[in-house]
Amino acid sequence: MKRRSLIATAILFSISLSTIVGCSNPSSERNSSLTPKASDLKLGFSAWPGWFPWQVTQDKGLFQKNKLGVDLKWFDSYVDSITALNTGNLDANSQTLMDTISSIATGKDLVIVLTNDNSTGNDKIITSDKIKSVKDLKGKKIATEEGTVDHFLLVLALKRVGMTMKDIKLVPLEASKAAAAFAAGKVDAAAVYAPFTTTALKRPGSRELFSSKDFRGAISDHLVFTRKFVTEHPEQVQATVDSWFETLNYIDSNKKNKDDAKLIMAKRAGVSGLEYEEYLDGTKIFTIDQNVETLKPGRDNSYLPTAAVEASKFLFENGFTKTKVNTSKMFDDRFIKAHLAKVRP
Figure 1 (cartoon, rainbow, N blue to C red):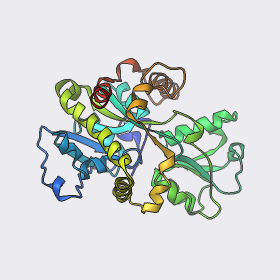
Figure 2 (figure 1 turned 180 degrees about the vertical axis):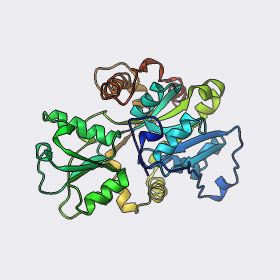
Figure 3 (figure 1 turned 135 degrees about the vertical axis):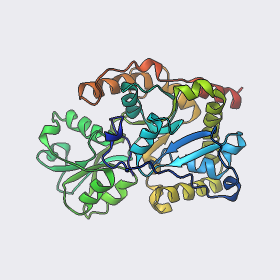
Figure 4 (figure 1 turned 30 degrees about the vertical axis):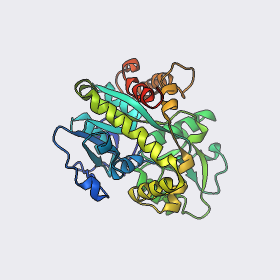
């Protein structure tokens, strides 16, 4: 599994499969009775706590409730989901702000319609107990996936103490292999995301040196559509947005539903229920009000217009994109506002 690269083509991620692998994995008889049609929405998602709720949406029939036929595609490789969106094999995908900007920089016309979450700790730099501070990383071997947001997180931490990537020995490995290499003692640290943090932390004496909670707003995740689909099928986009927020309401409505949803998401993540509990504080799922608020103009990265400008600048200045992106056209808030009007007229 792979998440959150900074480069928007197949080379975004070194673990991309030779072919796109997707399956809808319905887990209830009610949902298996819905056969998606060719004209239905093709929606992709992959391994990240902020995206696992889509499995709850499907399993609990919330797409159907909103009269929406969805071909929900799970991708073992996040790069494949981005490639599928960029090549028209998906209508929408769950992906990061930076990946979306990277794709737009290559000429893709994409639109962010909602924020799933911000990473508030589930992207981590994990080290041996011999490393006490970021400065102690000097000269050490650190495994991470080049061009990913975890690579970006590492750059931010080094910059904060006056260091650069030249001060460390980068070991480029995709997330699962980076975590495994650290757990086996082959590297001094690993920059990885949940659920691979669980693997890395199995090494005796391992510890979290810092995480995305130390860099507010730096890593955000979104529901992204092709502009063509938004233009031609706005009612399906609205139904998808409605289904997402209804899923969050289902999960938060009572303890029984929350426990049920946790089991569904843990199964999709391939971890135990107890292990999944460890991810909850590390991902801040955005409410409808927070979605509306984050699209307002603001001075820091908690506001998407500002975060997008800074992300685009970072990508361009570090050679991940060849052009600067006009980020003002990549957001469409009418669907979250319409949902808010429905639930709070």
